[in-house]
Amino acid sequence: MAQAIDSDLAAFRARMAGAAVLTPENPDYDGARTVWNGNIDRRPAVIVRCSSAQDVAAALEFSRSRGLEVSVRGGAHSFAGNAVSDGGLMIDLSAIKGIRVDPAARRAVCGGGATWADLDGATQAHGLAVPGGTISHTGVGGLTLGGGFGWLTAMAGLSSDNLVAAEVVTAGGRVLRTSADSHPDLFWAIRGGGGNFGVVTSFEFQLHEVGPLVNLGLFFWRLDDGAEALRFGRDFVRTLPDDMGVMFAGLNAPPAPFVPQEHQLAPGYALIVVGCGSAEEHQRAIQPVRDEGRPSFELVTPIPYANLQQMLDESAPWGLHAYEKALYVPDLTDEVIAVFTEQLPRKRSPLSFIPVFRMNGAYARAGEDQTAFGGPRTSCYAFNIAALAPTAELFEDERAWVRSFWDDLRPYSSGYGGYVNFMNEYDEDRVRASYGAAKYGRLARIKAEYDPDNVFHLNANIRPKGS
Ligand code: FAD
Image (cartoon, rainbow, N blue to C red; front, side):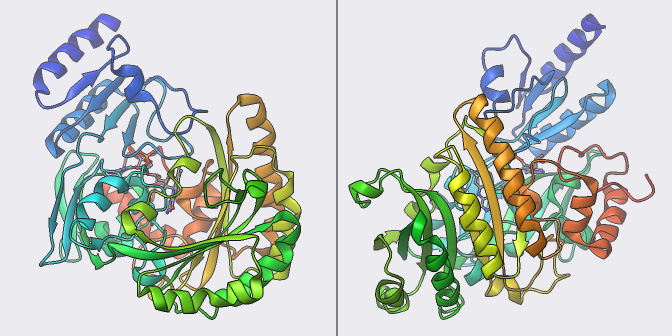
């Protein structure tokens, strides 16, 4: 059997001139199977580092003929480690990262394996941007397919709201261009339905004028001031222009030069306000935080958008043991704040981080059924409880803490199962709840058309209708 696979592999390798076909004896194999979450250690039988849609189709055909489970690697940031499986075939897109920007048409075409650092670098050369995530080493692929939110969400919507076309390789190996006019059902489904419908080898986005300089306001309060600060912050952000990006966070202050010595590495609460307009407008908008919020310290400064996109990178490096659970809450009510301030002091790892994204503005103006995105299209908060631990021992405690925090918050959630890109475990009920019954039903019908055998199931899985 092993010999049969070996000779098949040799023939497959010979056929795949443009792609690297890696197996355990290859020196690049261990690097290629490594994903962001250091708690994941899986050994696929074969890794195919593709360089084109045709390579992807050939890899899918090989996996089908050998009965190998398929995983797809974009930026490898899935907390669950969905990019890699034991004994399966990994379609590695990391070499498909070419980017073309057409500033006149305000369009960018981006390879399916690019990271946000790649895309931001190319678009910012023209003072343009696609709304992305908040950590630049995340993949454009997984983030966009599940929705995608960050600093520009209020101004310009989700990453997936800004997708205008994509090249998709289906489970059967067809290479399709999908857009509002071409396979519109598939186009609807990939804007929120995750990697369920095929391998996206290129994304075409509309672009927005952003920067190069934008304005950052970062404010920090000590643990003891948390409840008062969060109540103030909740009321204050309602006064902001609704195109400003807002995040609350529970975290340890970094040992950075702008942080006073006594607060360095101390846990507390942050409010971050990003504006893409003038520095004066931003100063006016954040002044009440200084006057009334009385933070322990602040950093208010113009910042290149590309640097803002990398500002949090060091808080989430590759290789830590990671686990997360998330949900949407309609508002930071006093009850939600009470849970936040009771639970934050219980984290043991200084690296664990609770980003709470404000979802409003352009995000909330998009229609509920405009895309497949799983989340309420009303102003709300996406509350993410993320454990990051340097050791397996500490990780066990942190994971228990995340679960208890999430259980306490659940009574105040919006009733949605949560953001599919912030899931570590994919209970079918929670995935269904993320989309709601009607959207899930439509996704299941489209899944049955494009992936009836559920080849792409290492994700927040939509089961093909009738299976
Ligand atoms: P991968 O693990 O490579 O892929 C994730 C899933 O998408 C897998 O199922 C994979 O098969 C599929 N996939 C990836 N690319 C493709 C493709 N081209 N075609 C088909 N399927 C594909 N999300 C936000 O919205 N905003 C944030 O600010 C944010 N910050 C994050 C910060 C960190 C440190 C991490 C770890 C995650 C963050 N996320 C954020 C969540 C992120 O959106 C998801 O983890 C997402 O799945 C990452 O995509 P990826 O391509 O890097 O990961």
